[in-house]
Length: 143
Image (cartoon, rainbow, N blue to C red; front, side, top):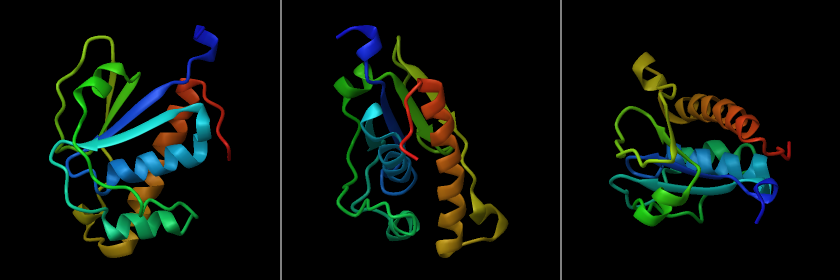
């Protein structure tokens, strides 16, 4: 595959792989389509997708309810182009040759905002960051 045909790959990571990293992956899949290979994982995966995260994305027509939290695959970690760590709590050892970014995402609960309103704000923050990353990767967004 020539460099011009290379599909960039991104791994989104948070602690539980139940909320923010799943939201980012769902947004990236929807906005970038097949122009970016998208993965998500958790440093300590939870048991199920966060219902409020799923509800906030569903408002925009994005369904992540079929996803399940999963651990980081070390082979995948070495082979993706970009690893994005969402939030302040997840920690991943850098891999030589892989671009690492940490997104210190909006945390509305710090301002006393909870429930679905919190998730809408988190979703909007992550969506803006996903769109910037798509631009940086040179991938063509769907919408």
